[in-house]
Image 1: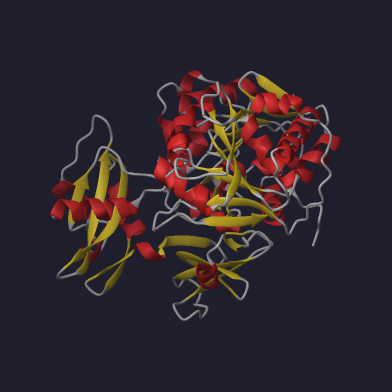
Image 2: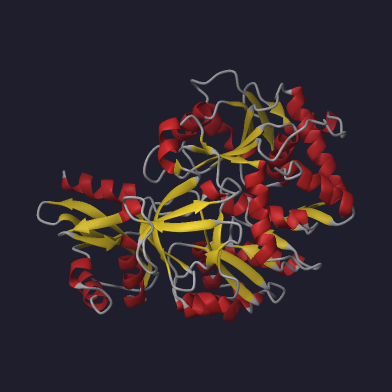
Length: 515
């Protein structure tokens, strides 16, 4: 155990090593590492003043901001557990998470006070603090006033790498959300992964554009840049043109942008009016991508490297990553090799390791694997077995140790006695039909086939596509039993806050239409 591996120490040591370096840029506000460390101290003392003790849970609801990040680090400084809530959720969804997470204090961005008022209608004994605007929420206190009045001294709470740091509620695409508990060690080891494969240069500057309620915003790049005393440019939420503007203004060199928003950036009508030549590395992640996408992103953005990664909340999140752009171009849909400190196995339904190239469930073991789900003992017994995290993802390793994702175990469609990967069908549909912007495939109960392959597609603006045409073209890439039995054209696909398609809602929409 290395007790120095805590989120608080990352900030504290960066302030000691790089006191005058710029730490955070948010709008017109800019703080050095020394100033940011003092802000974290003040926020930590605000928590102490609100009665937050070691092990208590505190949460925040809001878009990315300086306050968001400093409250996270402040919670770590006093040994509290930080919960990042998805601001896109409804009041009833928030109510469930707030109650389930046993949060003692809730920080609320001013624009979300009304939804919080609804969410807390049946909940009591929660201290409320509002930031980023005028206070209108009954019983709440103003963050600026509390922060300004708090001491800037370190509260000096002993926190270790094995202590709980964060509770991050998973997307709940297959059921009620569940809170994944990450320790300080989990998060710091994750940063070690990025420092290994994406070591920052002295001139590097990172764009934080993915939502901080998700691992892609809170962990990827963020902590590793803090370790090395580099600046973070924080966007409240992703907007392709604003991202271009910030990259140009601050000469951003590194960014984590998931595949869907990266596609929006590439397609942004105003992109070419901005100077993006400073951008040298982008790390992205998605279950599916094409070589064409990788070539386009690297060429049009002038990148030195485009990294494709695989991860999940329960691994804080990094599991594997491509080191060179050529790897993702030569091995389409590879997610790179496992991070050096991780063990990865592929097993069958009986838990036996399968041969190279054979598909099975991806299992992960290492220092970044989470502690477990909060108050979910039965689920933890299934997900964590003998030190191995059962990801619920189907994949395989090739002869060179590269990892490939096939599908979510629950998204495999069993049709006519055959297993059909929904992801494989989605990739084929998009490859065969360039008029489409998005595609999602699910299995729908069918009297004859058991499950029938159903495709939900979104057509690009100004384009057209017919069902027969779509299926005919896709037939060139897939066996007949994998082809969609039905195609549903939609204006958009339902997604959660991290951009994942909510396939459960798609299945339910078909069931409702058949009633």
